[in-house]
Structure formats: structure tokens, C-alpha cells
Image (cartoon, rainbow over the protein chains, first blue to last red):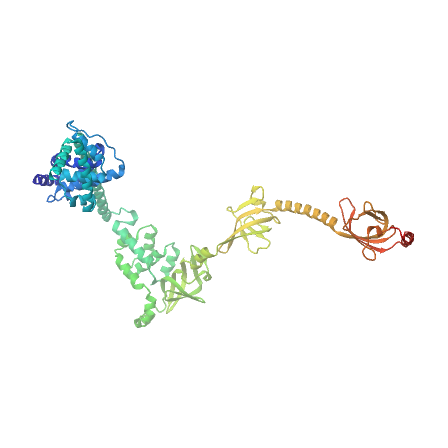
Length: 167
Length: 462
């Protein structure tokens, strides 16, 4: 997949819009899930996604294809998400649309609502992206120790919810 | 623990996969990218057009005289550069007397005069031709181009002439040159244009930069288009001196003051304002003189003239002997009336009031003034405390405070009809006299005897 991304980045650098569209389709869900887990709002998440990809297109010529483009995207998206949160200063939590009606995802969403904003992004990065504690710390501008305690606290709370519901 | 983590990962993956993304998002994003690219293309196009236009203008302006009489762009730049050099020039440039006279006849700036003199040293072009070209508003760059003279050569001439007089004096070669020039120009006068700072004034000699210049009766001195005298020169003034040089002596023909220190000081320090109240001595429509003020006061359309209590009035109201309150601003040596308030009417009113007041005061004073009355007591009414004289048709009122003296302190009852008394008292509104003191000067002897007999008869009685 990394090779595929490298190739796409090279094409995007040349201004290939088809390559950009393909890259978008391959990565949007991944970026969306992380941002949504933090903002818990479809509208805000869409804004952040739009800004993230516009930014990527604007700086495409400066992107180094040898480096992980996903890490780069993650960084841009998280920064925009933080900005969005600061601007809004309120979390309008809307029900996300789910593919099935089993209730597990709704439960996760409800559990995420109960967590602190930063705990949510830490949890999302850890479980959705397998991001290391060190990298999370760099992304959210916190020390490793703080990230660890956030992770521990959030995980504990999430487990409680899950166990109570016997998922 | 691992199991638990894996379970959470599964849950999050389900969460991720369960998210239903807005399908319009992709379309919107591509649309925005398209718009941004369009804007960038437009900007690039406009920038290109502007760049091409500037480049074309520069190319054309370097060939064609797009700046009209100032010539091409390089000529304009060269002209401005030369003028800057001439403006900052401080030194002496020599030329012929007739050229000085010609320059004086023209209304040329100092930098123009300096450039012309420098130019004449570099070429044989007649001065009047250069002056004519300049008077036609041609730029220096274009003039030099037409005369095939480089700007740099004129700049070098100016540079060499900087403080040439000082150098000549300190340089031994100057002696030789002087001797040589003396022979060459035996009967020919040498003229110089000197620009610099006035460093000294000693009698009729001034020092500009390092050059001593003699002032003669024919020397004209101008400041801002006005003729001034040597007294208006101050150390530090920036001057342009056109002078003739006979051997070592410079004789100033004309002096132009650029920066007058005295004038600057005047505008900065000598402006002051004050207010006076006085009567008009004379007024001729513009110059007003008032008593108690020795200087003429200028009255013009800016002077605000008012009559107290009535508001604005015209200049004709300023009549001799009218009392005015005048606000004066001193601008240098001129006393300018900024506002005049005519007080005449108000003053009269005040006087009338004053007169009334003084009448009243006078009345009060006369009423309250202590008076002395002397006479023989005609009537005594002890019950009402009233006493009257034979000679005066007035009543004297005695009160408890009245001091009565008759061979020492006495009582009102001691006073008898026929007694001669001196009464000190004040006149009251009803005409009576409030008595302060009664001195019995002469007792009525008959009454005294009677009273003495009565006293004897009354002896032993309570």
C-alpha cells in the first residue's frame, strides 16, 4: 500500500487530478474516522476533511514521496480538527449514520461522548491507526506520560461501557 | 489484556467501517480545487500582463521620450541624479561676470544656477541657450543629452569644485595658479557661484564655508523672494552667493538665503499672544493704535470684531476714543489683532451704574457721616429721648448708648432747657440725628440755680 501511495504522490505532484481522486478515495475513511472520533460531528468533520485535502493539493509540490503520506495527512487533519474545536468551542454531537443497526457503534459513540476531547483522539489514533504513544504525543502536543494516562483512563471507561453492554 | 485490546480494536474498526461518508464531499473538494486553480491561473495571467507592460514601458521609455520634455527614462534618472548633486553641492564655481548677470535675470533655482555654471566649464555652449532650454522646462538629462555632455562629467566638475577656495589657499599650487591667472586675466574679473553655510559675519565681510566674501552697497540679499538686509543674515544660514573675484577678494553681487535661522527662530520663539484693554487713538482701516501700547496693530479680514453684548460688528465700529478689549498676536515684528471687543456701550453702562452706585454711596456716606452740632437746648422730651435746639430745625434722638458729658459723665436728665451743648451724631433717613455723644458746654445758670434750690428743698427726701 505504501508503494501505491508513493506512486500516487508522485503523480499528484505533477498535477494529476485522477491520482489525487484515487488517493482521496483510498484515504478519506481513515482520516475521517480519526477526525470524527474527536469532533463527533459530521458537519465539522467534513469541513476538516475538505481543508485537509485542499491543503495537501496546495502543497503537493513540496510533499516528499519517500516519507509517509498518511502520517502527513494525519498531522494536517489533527491540526485542522483542533482548530475547528477551538473555533466552535462546543461539540454538536450528531448521530453518525451507520451501515447496520446492531447498536455496537452507537454504543461506542455514546462511550466516546463521555470521554474528554483529547482522550477521544488519543483512543482513536491508538485503536484505529495503531499509532505509537510517542507519535500520539507529538501529534497532540503532549508528553508520552500524559498520553499514557489518557489512554489508560479512556480505555478503562470504554471497557466499562462495553462490558456493561456485554459486547 | 491483549485479548481486551484486540476486542477494542475490533470495536473501533467496526466504528470506522460503519461511518457513512457524505458522497458529495469528493465532488465539492474537486470543485474547490478547480476554482482555486482557476484563480491562480488568472493571477498568473494578470501578473504576466503587468510584467510585460512594465518591461515594454521600460524598453520604450529608454528609447522614446515618453516623459515629454524630461526625455527618456534614463535621461530623467540622470537629470534627477544631477539635481541631487547640485542641491548637496557646497563650494565655489567660477564663471564670467556676464553669465552671473544673465543668471540673475532669470528666475532659476539654485541647483539650476550651479548646474549651468558647471556645464559652462565643460562645454562651449552659450549660457543663454542652456537657460532657454531650461526655461522651456526641459529636464537636465535631456539637455545634457542634446549637448552631448555626460552627467558624470558635470558631477565630477561639482565634486572638484567642492570647497575649492579652501584648498587653493592651503595648497602651494594655488599660489602659482593665482600668479598665472593674474597674468591671464589681468583686467578681467572672475566670477564665482558659492553655495554653503554662513559661518561668520564681521562688519561687511561674511564667511561662507571657508570663503570670505565682501558685501558692497551693490550686493542684493534675498530671502523667499523678498529683499532683506545684512542684518537678516544669521550664522548657520544656507546661502547661494554669486560673487566677483578680483585677485583674492570676493565681492558678493547677490546672495540668496535658503534657510534663514533668524526667521526660523522668529517663527518658533517670537510668536506670542496677549490681550489689552484700552481706548482707540487712531484707525485708518487697517492699522490701529491704542493708548498704552506703542506699536501699530494690524487689523484685517481675519480680525474678529465684536460689540460687547451684541455680537459681531463691522470694522467701521472701530472709532477713536472707543474702549476696546483687543487680543493681539505677535508674528515676528507684526502685531496682529485676532479679535477686538468694543466695550464702549458696556463701559458707559458700567459708568452709569457706577455713577448711580457712587451717588448712593455718597448719600449713604453723607447720611452715615458723623456731624457735630452746637446750640442751645430748646426742647427736651425725656420720655421719647428727644432733644431739640433753638437754632436748628431738627430733632436729636438720644439712645441708651448716647454718652452724655457734663462736668464728667452725666445723665440725660441732667440736661436742661437753655443748656449749650455740643452734639455729635449721624443723620438718619427721616432727617433726625442719632446722637452718639452730648457734651454740655455751658449750663443754663437759672435752671442750675432753680435746680439747686429744688435740690436744697428736696434734701432729706428719698
